[in-house]
Length: 349
Image (cartoon, rainbow, N blue to C red; front, side, top):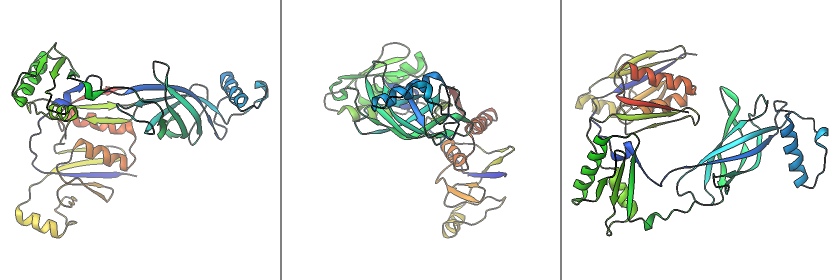
């Protein structure tokens, strides 16, 4: 099946990058968790590794069922490593996503049931418990995810309210950017609160009359020069795409085997806008239909973007039509190469 994605792009305003787009607050970060578990209920696609059978034997022993490991002959189980990111300030009872990967010779873990698994931090403490049905990735059946698959059991202590100052760490070392951020923060508050310690770290003293959360929010939303390039981070393993700010896509056409992307530019006068509001499905030519401002047409399905089409609109639309992550990544690279997006792309994974 061949899909057609059509975008209508209107004259865009310049977006200024903010401090949040190029830095993070030291101490406020995710923490990695890991655990070893068993998946059961596989329809003959599991593994017969010795450590898998031993793990099952130990599990049964904990349930007061004694059985020799040699008597276990099943390919309906699989040994897996379970990983997750524990977000900053996670609280007991919060749900987090987990990633499950086989370590034996299992062929598929799709729709298997992960038995309760302890997820530990690098300090050896248990911070979450994972369990649930695995959804394998389309291109690799030995790796999958459980959305909201783990429950936070223990919290990482961090008293943000007690902090008298915060430290910003630039994603990329730059004396120019560090100096600019120092000056912008001091101008914003009208006093010398910020000091660039080095080309990557800026220390900012918090005024006693400003709550720390409001203080951080104010700093992160300070606009920098519009000449800064926005950043597009693609994490292949997590299947996530992160952009700094709203990255608008310029007019371009990309034709691929399974779909075609068309981004057009148009300008409507007041009368046309009035007609459009009265007839949101009106056709303005070239097979482009709009509803309110800008619309993404995916195989006759309309998605109203409400503003200039951006990378986030494109990615969301492609996920709706279940385009594989590798094709989404290739498309974004093409847009970058063709000059349709002014952004730095960083691949992780």
